[in-house]
Length: 71
Image (cartoon, rainbow, N blue to C red; front, top):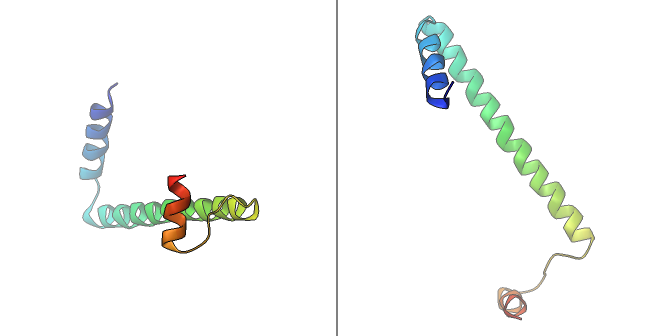
């Protein structure tokens, strides 16, 4: 089964739902997407903290950082 046909099946299933069920599904998907984005941000923050504690983060003015990156 291809990805497109699977997607089409999902759309057909959604169309079979009542309007209220479709609205509830939209809300549920929005909340899950927001949670997924928060989880990614939290993971990035955790990784940045580890790198900072390991001394792998450049600090200084923009000019100093650019000079360091050019080396």
